[in-house]
Length: 77
Image (cartoon, rainbow, N blue to C red; front, top):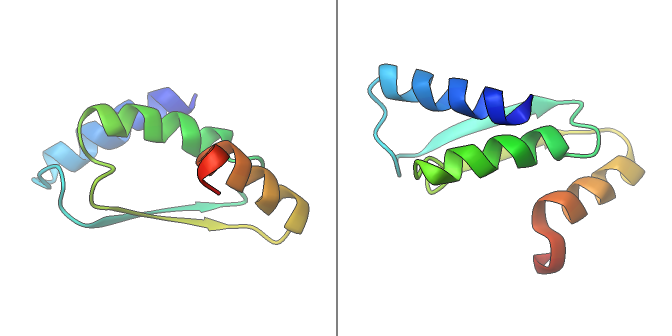
C-alpha cells in the first residue's frame, strides 16, 4: 500500500509542477510502526523526491515512535 501511495504522490508532485529536489512536506497522522512511510520513501527516493522532503510523523505513543525510528532510520538512529 505504501509503495502505491509513493507512486501516487510522485505523480501528484509532478502534475503540480514541483521538480525533484525542491522543498516539500509530508505529514502522516498516526503512523503506527512507520512502515507505510518507509514504503512511500522507497518509491519517492527513486524519483529524487526525498531530497527536498521534510517528513513529519504525528505520534502520541512513545513505543510506536521508537519503532518508527528503527523502521525509518535503522542503524543511523
